[in-house]
Length: 116
Image (tube, rainbow, N blue to C red):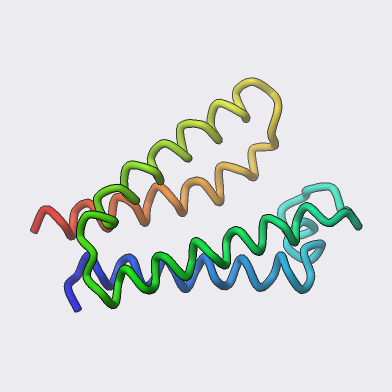
């Protein structure tokens, strides 16, 4: 497995972990980051979406789909910029930047691994 594929696999497992928490006990995650607790269905909907994305990342890693690796680095940077915009606009709490920072860092890891 190439270094870029390893970075994708690690990120896919991270996403799967987030998905599991959002599906099973979203308020645990919310309380850790000072987000409002909820009984609504939307965290589980997001968890399902994350689980599907995690599947893409993990499968792409094992199949060495380099084109997906490149596209994902761009997407993770875009997500960081958009989350930062939400926080700067006062529409999101700064804790969003923790999750987004992980996205950015993992995207940079993949990008640098691709450049090798």
